[in-house]
Length: 408
Image (cartoon, rainbow, N blue to C red):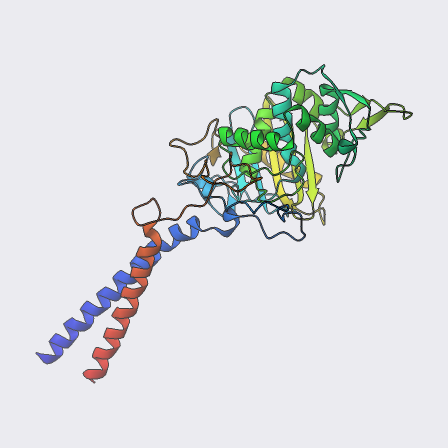
């Protein structure tokens, strides 16, 4: 009888241990998905570009939406492929990428689509959308020394030069002119107002990983985007006839200033000259963002686009990586998406879109504040259940070992 009681006790304790283990294993994947590190924030900066200016403070962390924008699979880490799809092409070193149909909005394949990285100059798509929707194309803008003194790539604006909004958009998209971005921002109400509008636009598109800090995409405090979000913006650009025309323009005349005569600017997108059906795209680079690239192409009635973030030019160039992903996307059958590009923010709206008491010099629009999770909120019980599972497992094992020692 004693041995039977001991046996039953051991069985009961083993059952507790198994239950704890099941609880642990059952919750672990959900916790891992909720805390996928690349989805929380961009990697730490390598320079001082994100140090807040004197008199301002760093913006708060961005929150995570309750569910992945674009579908459950958009929240996955690593490769996100249709069932039975072949592996992506070799040589793709971008940390995050998305292949999507520009017309249907289907996401055909992806890798870490919601990983948060810095967008570099691909963020100029938001500036271009604001400008083309708000400014008369024939408005004449007088260049300033501040325009000319912008860091990074410039189209060649000079003080006293006269430029139409259309010409500024040309310089913005063909050669990624940071001077053109600044000049357009001034026409949109100033740099701070433009950044606020960019964040508002991103929020309206459902781009909840995006926080603009500059009109040009140069790094600044809190800068963030994702391949999924850039695909949302790129899709909007591909629905604006003028912007599609400019993206596909190989060369254009640009005005001079003072004693400098006008000159010709060439599109820096390499696929325009090498990829059949290329519609154009946008590239970007900063030390913190590394290389970013967007490209679109049309084939057999389909318009596909690719977005690559945080890539390197070696051993395979970013343009070649984009071309390989486009080929991969065109080979995938339509109608088997792994997600979708939304056309509006999720409903109900993700908490944190408005930040009470936001810091001076920080634009709250589209900058989603991190809010603490309390028991009862969506996803908040997962860590609690996880720790309960661990505690039950450990307790069961310890009691089982104690019982065995007593009855040896």
